[in-house]
Image 1: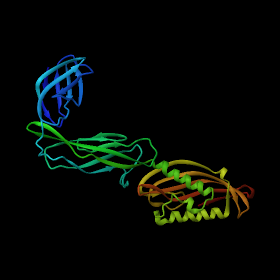
Image 2 (image 1 turned 180 degrees about the vertical axis):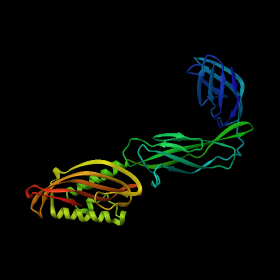
Image 3 (image 1 turned 135 degrees about the vertical axis):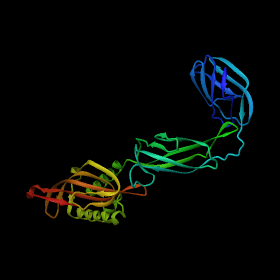
Image 4 (image 1 turned 30 degrees about the vertical axis):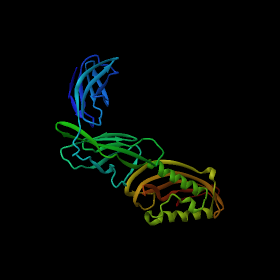
Length: 342
């Protein structure tokens, strides 16, 4: 049986190649009494063992056990400890980068792939870092520490997900590679299903509008600051008009989500026959059907049309900005059909 190398660090991590015979799936290895951190059997005559950590320097046996049999190389392995002069690295920051322009910090989409980039402070030069990420989703690392993080594709949004990072520094002293770890670091982001969240709020608003609830209850998902609060103020006026003039048939009310839905931060929404809305983060629409009684005309009505929604991100949460309805209202008993806009 032969071993290379026959030395390693007390910090562990060295890959030791062993050649011999009769290696099987149950093969185990110890170095100076320390079990290998892992063993990969490459063939019946070859294996690679990752050295386990040891608290002190020293010389000891190499023992390989497989199939109930053991073979030993007495006194053939030496552990060396690092001098302590090398200081461990420090993770000073982590940032996430999306491919979407103007996307708010730490605000991302479900199943989106982002880049997560750590910043590591280290006093020494000529060392190597190993980056190990764990958490929900999948991680594809690059040698420079930048990692592609594919966020989870399922879950109740909005949700906070956290990636944990361990940075290991690899350095050489007297020909021995040692390793030491930085304190663990983490990076949390909010994950959204923007289409669902915005259209859920749109449905909630229109349902409350149809039920003719007071404005403060109906507008609870509207931003008071987007577009100077004009969208919220306009809807408050529409709610009071609806409550004063119409009796809505709640059972006849229908909604259908319709494409397209777009997320373009600090962009523009077009809302039917209304002027374009600037500085908007998302645009969507719903097909709406209403039936009821118009107290001013003294007749039943049927209304169909499109309700256009715009939304913004505030404090990493979606908020509605504007709701604009364009459609037609017909009064069968009066033989009247007219275009309407709310």
